Amino acid sequence: MTKPERDKNKIRKPNRKLVLIVMVLILAVVFILANAIGTVFVPFPQIIRIILKHLGILRDTVFQYGQEAIIFMVRLPRVIVAMVVGAALATAGAVMQGMFRNPMADPGIIGISSGASLGAVTAILTGLSVRNIYYMPMFAIAGALGAALIIFILSSRGGKVPVLTLVLSGIAVSTFLGAITSVILTYINDYQVRAYLFWTLGGLSDRRWEHVNLATLPIIVCIAVLFIFARDLNVLQLGEEEAQAVGLNPSRTRKILLFFASVTAALAVCVSGAISFVGLIVPHIMRLIVGPDHRILLPASALGGAIFLIVCDLISRVVLLPREIGVGIVTSLIGAPYFLFLLIRARKDGGAVI
Image (cartoon, rainbow, N blue to C red; front, side, top):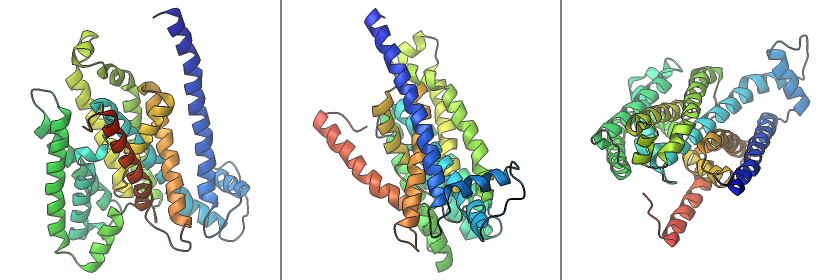
């Protein structure tokens, strides 16, 4: 590496770290705003005091009627779930885009959504979803991981996973699972159909501390593992021969990355329903800002996904007050035009979509 290149890298690194610091501050701001804004506005200082009280730092603190319940029992767990789910989907998307070297890749191509939907409707059909809050998420995780495993087995050839084969296998398996889901929907009652449709639209209403406890720690662990493999993900960008030359086993690394990315996305989907485009547009935008180095890109995507989904959830709550719409609708309204933009730009540049 020449001296000008070294000097250029020295200039870039602090800028990238500064981006992460700014994003952390933005996340803190939108976190407080999302807790404050709603049908009832709660002042920022009160939110901080309520959180500190439940952390055991403040004692014998009295709040206005209803404020503590609104923040701690309703908004705070919902915002935490939005933050964790957004980080999970964006990180999984960044890993898949890097692994397949394609900006169009996202968790949906390995059947996460279709498998989770089948698991969710199965829980509804059996009546287990009304017995315990954990049954639907558990079934959704099982369905998502099962779909990802089937697609990976079908697309794996000689220990390698061709991108085009993976995408085609994902389309075929997702369509098949969607057909099974449709058959099940014809045998359940109207109330169960409404419950399923509400879940598939992607929503964070009525998220409680049970959902926070279910998903937060496993998602954090999976994201941390993906962060550890950031350097290996960079090496995979060089190609099979180059990766092997530096002592990396490309096939084994891809399997590990695919597994943990699948689990991360499945855990997110199981508590939020199918929320589209977070894993597609956030990593793509972050790559434009911080560059392709996954050691920076993955944490930037996690922060960006958390910020994006909290903001989208806030919009879904306040845009039609006193009613609210599914956050998945908001992300689709933002993500679909951006996806079309990527397709149009790829065609103009003469690049392949997959």
